[in-house]
Length: 407
Image 1 (cartoon, helix red, strand yellow):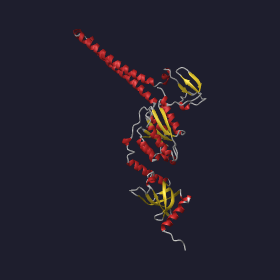
Image 2: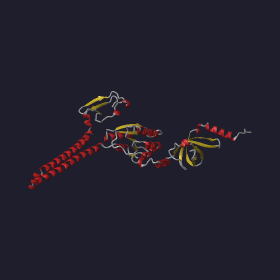
Image 3: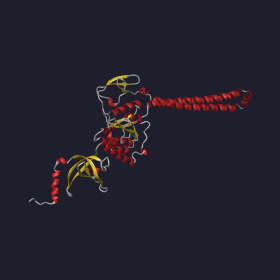
Image 4: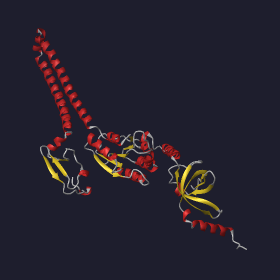
């Protein structure tokens, strides 16, 4: 006759057998959620995972449930990471789930819509939280891959439109498991830099799955907490992510983001030229008005009666003429000052005048201006001044610690 044991001993023995099986310790299961309940007090989630033929009970504790990027719902297809064992008290075979993912793009889209609705309800998309972009930024922080095409596109546009701006790159991985945390940390890091005027988060085009990381809740909340104006430039014009709704400005491409971030140098020059022309026209108009007024006085003086009246009140007329001359001189002086300021501002945009003051710039053989990142040992460069160009070879490139720089 078999040995008589207790129910507790049986359950404990079966649980020991299951826990000793390595194949049951880390499982990835696909199934449909059924009988989903989340305890309002404890936060634990209880449900069944089923397929066409079978079902198994499962539990997900609060610490793991809080990390979910979506809200599980009845009938949703998911993939779970779990371990299978026996709940000793009730003798129930069940799963202990530590992570859960939507199964398939349809369910993933549902999770995305749930997150979008949640963040919108919290006010992360509200227009009153959008910050205006600076008109003339001096330093732009960029969050993107250091090897991607997005960075080069941004550099090309900034060099063409507003070459005086400084670019500060915080390199990240733009897809994969660690990408979301890296992007969120990069936004926070650049936001803490005092010299940064605005931030661009960019990624080149790719599939929907490639861009999915920018739907992460941690990136959305990092962008919302960012005090600096933030431009999102993810994928192409037809691609939208959660970050686009939270950002202060959305650009269809990284190149478009660079265009939004800085003014156009050529356009600013045209504005200054128009201002200069308007000042000249206004000066000529005022001069003509004064001249016509003097002509009218001359006509009156040429008449006999007027001449006799003028002879009687010569002192009064002289005062009127002096007042007119003084007024003309004041207005002419004011217009000349305005013209001088406009001319000085226009001249300050000329890079060759900067060279004339003794500065130099480093270029390639074709005249392209090189920045610090382009300097490599043994590379041939040209040092350009106002009237000469020197051909040089780089012997070494040294990093300069910002804390030890002298200004």
